Image (cartoon, rainbow, N blue to C red; front, side, top):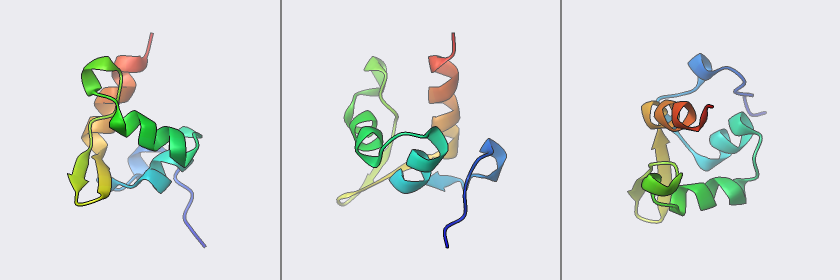
Length: 69
């Protein structure tokens, strides 16, 4: 059984697309699309390790604050 991440402070320091999808209530496909968009144009900054992508919790926090109106 996977742990539901509903609070920001409960998230791990390095996030997978699965965790982001669950936390942001977006499809995994949309999360990967956001990771592919340049952060200057609204994408989420991510680390690429081979074919894998990860997002630092601090980068998610920065991205979320930049999206707030």
